Length: 168
Image (cartoon, rainbow, N blue to C red; front, side, top):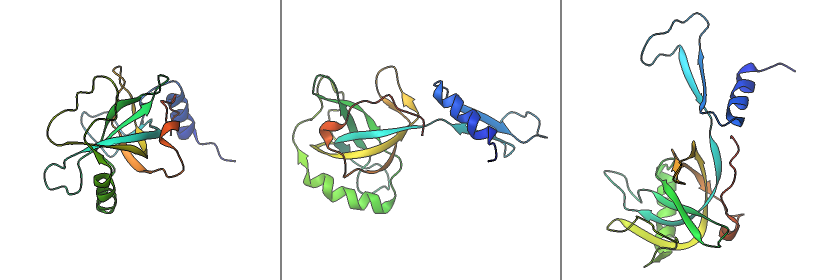
Protein backbone atom coordinates (compact mmCIF):
# COMPACT_ATOMS: atom_id res chain seq x y z
CA UNK A 1 0.00 0.00 0.00
CA UNK A 2 1.28 3.47 -0.88
CA UNK A 3 1.90 5.95 1.90
CA UNK A 4 0.08 9.27 1.70
CA UNK A 5 1.99 11.73 3.90
CA UNK A 6 -0.35 14.57 2.95
CA UNK A 7 -3.45 12.73 4.24
CA UNK A 8 -1.58 11.49 7.29
CA UNK A 9 -0.40 15.00 8.19
CA UNK A 10 -3.86 16.51 7.71
CA UNK A 11 -5.49 13.76 9.78
CA UNK A 12 -2.91 14.23 12.57
CA UNK A 13 -3.45 18.03 12.56
CA UNK A 14 -7.23 17.64 12.74
CA UNK A 15 -7.02 15.10 15.60
CA UNK A 16 -5.15 17.60 17.77
CA UNK A 17 -7.69 20.34 17.05
CA UNK A 18 -5.71 22.28 14.46
CA UNK A 19 -7.20 24.33 11.63
CA UNK A 20 -5.46 22.45 8.82
CA UNK A 21 -2.21 22.43 6.88
CA UNK A 22 -0.59 24.53 4.16
CA UNK A 23 0.95 22.72 1.18
CA UNK A 24 3.24 24.16 -1.47
CA UNK A 25 4.91 23.02 -4.63
CA UNK A 26 8.42 21.84 -3.89
CA UNK A 27 10.11 24.49 -6.05
CA UNK A 28 7.90 27.45 -5.12
CA UNK A 29 9.11 30.34 -3.01
CA UNK A 30 7.16 32.35 -0.49
CA UNK A 31 5.30 35.34 -1.90
CA UNK A 32 2.62 37.31 -0.06
CA UNK A 33 -0.95 36.85 -1.33
CA UNK A 34 -2.70 33.94 -3.00
CA UNK A 35 -0.94 31.61 -5.38
CA UNK A 36 -1.66 28.36 -7.19
CA UNK A 37 1.65 27.11 -5.81
CA UNK A 38 0.32 27.09 -2.24
CA UNK A 39 -2.95 25.56 -0.99
CA UNK A 40 -4.65 25.35 2.39
CA UNK A 41 -6.30 22.09 3.43
CA UNK A 42 -8.74 22.78 6.26
CA UNK A 43 -9.97 20.49 8.99
CA UNK A 44 -13.74 20.18 8.99
CA UNK A 45 -16.25 18.62 11.32
CA UNK A 46 -19.77 17.43 10.69
CA UNK A 47 -22.81 16.42 12.64
CA UNK A 48 -26.59 16.61 12.65
CA UNK A 49 -28.61 19.54 13.98
CA UNK A 50 -32.31 20.16 14.53
CA UNK A 51 -33.83 22.85 12.32
CA UNK A 52 -35.86 25.27 14.46
CA UNK A 53 -36.37 28.11 12.02
CA UNK A 54 -35.18 29.94 8.96
CA UNK A 55 -34.52 33.46 7.73
CA UNK A 56 -35.92 35.47 4.84
CA UNK A 57 -33.67 35.37 1.75
CA UNK A 58 -31.45 38.37 0.98
CA UNK A 59 -30.61 39.82 -2.41
CA UNK A 60 -31.49 37.74 -5.46
CA UNK A 61 -31.64 34.44 -3.58
CA UNK A 62 -34.99 32.67 -3.63
CA UNK A 63 -36.55 30.32 -1.10
CA UNK A 64 -34.99 31.13 2.28
CA UNK A 65 -31.80 32.70 3.58
CA UNK A 66 -30.45 30.41 6.28
CA UNK A 67 -31.57 27.56 8.52
CA UNK A 68 -31.56 28.22 12.28
CA UNK A 69 -30.23 25.10 13.97
CA UNK A 70 -29.66 23.65 17.41
CA UNK A 71 -29.21 20.50 19.46
CA UNK A 72 -30.77 18.96 22.56
CA UNK A 73 -28.70 19.45 25.70
CA UNK A 74 -28.63 17.35 28.88
CA UNK A 75 -31.42 19.58 30.27
CA UNK A 76 -33.73 18.21 27.52
CA UNK A 77 -34.09 21.62 25.89
CA UNK A 78 -33.28 22.62 22.32
CA UNK A 79 -30.32 25.01 22.28
CA UNK A 80 -29.65 27.34 19.36
CA UNK A 81 -26.14 27.14 17.88
CA UNK A 82 -26.16 29.01 14.58
CA UNK A 83 -27.38 29.98 11.14
CA UNK A 84 -26.54 27.75 8.19
CA UNK A 85 -26.69 29.79 4.98
CA UNK A 86 -24.17 28.01 2.74
CA UNK A 87 -24.36 24.75 0.81
CA UNK A 88 -27.77 25.21 -0.84
CA UNK A 89 -28.22 24.83 -4.57
CA UNK A 90 -31.41 26.01 -6.32
CA UNK A 91 -32.94 22.55 -6.26
CA UNK A 92 -32.44 22.25 -2.50
CA UNK A 93 -33.80 25.75 -1.84
CA UNK A 94 -36.97 25.02 -3.78
CA UNK A 95 -37.34 21.55 -2.30
CA UNK A 96 -37.00 22.73 1.33
CA UNK A 97 -38.89 26.04 1.20
CA UNK A 98 -42.46 24.63 1.06
CA UNK A 99 -41.58 22.08 3.76
CA UNK A 100 -40.29 24.82 6.05
CA UNK A 101 -43.35 26.99 5.45
CA UNK A 102 -45.67 24.07 6.23
CA UNK A 103 -43.99 23.68 9.65
CA UNK A 104 -44.24 27.37 10.71
CA UNK A 105 -45.21 28.22 14.26
CA UNK A 106 -45.43 31.53 16.12
CA UNK A 107 -42.79 30.91 18.81
CA UNK A 108 -39.17 29.87 19.00
CA UNK A 109 -38.49 26.21 19.77
CA UNK A 110 -35.10 27.19 21.22
CA UNK A 111 -34.67 27.59 24.96
CA UNK A 112 -33.00 30.45 26.78
CA UNK A 113 -31.91 33.80 25.51
CA UNK A 114 -32.02 33.63 21.76
CA UNK A 115 -31.14 36.88 20.07
CA UNK A 116 -33.08 36.00 16.96
CA UNK A 117 -36.13 38.22 17.22
CA UNK A 118 -37.52 40.54 14.61
CA UNK A 119 -38.53 40.64 10.99
CA UNK A 120 -37.22 38.01 8.63
CA UNK A 121 -37.05 35.25 11.28
CA UNK A 122 -39.51 32.37 11.01
CA UNK A 123 -39.90 29.59 13.59
CA UNK A 124 -40.82 26.03 12.74
CA UNK A 125 -41.73 22.86 14.60
CA UNK A 126 -38.41 21.13 15.37
CA UNK A 127 -38.96 17.96 13.33
CA UNK A 128 -36.28 18.27 10.60
CA UNK A 129 -32.70 17.12 11.09
CA UNK A 130 -29.96 18.57 8.87
CA UNK A 131 -26.41 17.34 8.48
CA UNK A 132 -23.95 20.24 8.63
CA UNK A 133 -20.23 20.57 8.01
CA UNK A 134 -18.40 23.28 9.99
CA UNK A 135 -14.88 24.32 10.93
CA UNK A 136 -15.25 24.52 14.71
CA UNK A 137 -17.33 25.55 17.72
CA UNK A 138 -16.82 29.13 18.90
CA UNK A 139 -16.20 29.87 22.58
CA UNK A 140 -19.81 31.10 22.76
CA UNK A 141 -21.12 27.73 21.57
CA UNK A 142 -21.94 28.63 17.97
CA UNK A 143 -20.92 26.98 14.70
CA UNK A 144 -18.13 28.61 12.72
CA UNK A 145 -18.38 28.43 8.89
CA UNK A 146 -21.34 26.02 8.75
CA UNK A 147 -22.40 24.49 5.42
CA UNK A 148 -25.54 22.48 4.74
CA UNK A 149 -25.01 18.91 3.51
CA UNK A 150 -28.53 17.47 3.53
CA UNK A 151 -31.63 16.41 5.46
CA UNK A 152 -31.34 13.25 7.57
CA UNK A 153 -34.52 11.19 7.50
CA UNK A 154 -32.96 8.39 9.54
CA UNK A 155 -32.38 10.44 12.71
CA UNK A 156 -34.97 11.60 15.23
CA UNK A 157 -34.67 15.24 16.39
CA UNK A 158 -34.62 14.20 20.09
CA UNK A 159 -31.52 12.08 19.38
CA UNK A 160 -29.54 15.12 18.19
CA UNK A 161 -27.04 16.22 20.86
CA UNK A 162 -23.82 18.20 20.70
CA UNK A 163 -21.12 15.76 19.74
CA UNK A 164 -17.40 15.89 20.19
CA UNK A 165 -17.13 16.36 16.43
CA UNK A 166 -14.54 14.31 14.62
CA UNK A 167 -12.65 15.60 11.62
CA UNK A 168 -14.42 14.82 8.33
